[in-house]
Amino acid sequence: MTLYPVDKIYEEVGFIAYYFHWPHDEIMSMEHRERRRWCDEISRINRNLNGEKPSDNPFDIF
Image 1 (tube, rainbow, N blue to C red):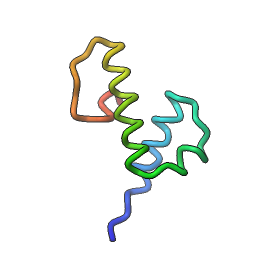
Image 2 (image 1 turned 60 degrees about the vertical axis):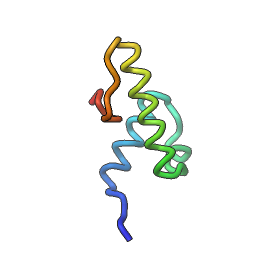
Image 3 (image 1 turned 90 degrees about the vertical axis):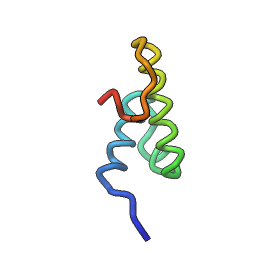
Image 4 (image 1 turned 120 degrees about the vertical axis):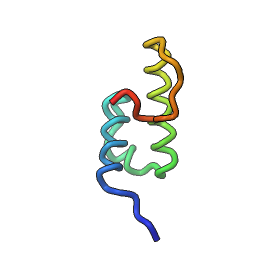
């Protein structure tokens, strides 16, 4: 069994909390795939607002 790296969890939680202001417990209760999907969506929103082309990297705004 491979565990998801803790530093990546903090990165995802911080990313979502910063942009959506959702509570820590709510974000942490999400499945990994759901958190990653929200990170993708936040990145897409930012790219659209900045007039940028789509990217495969969900954390491209860092």
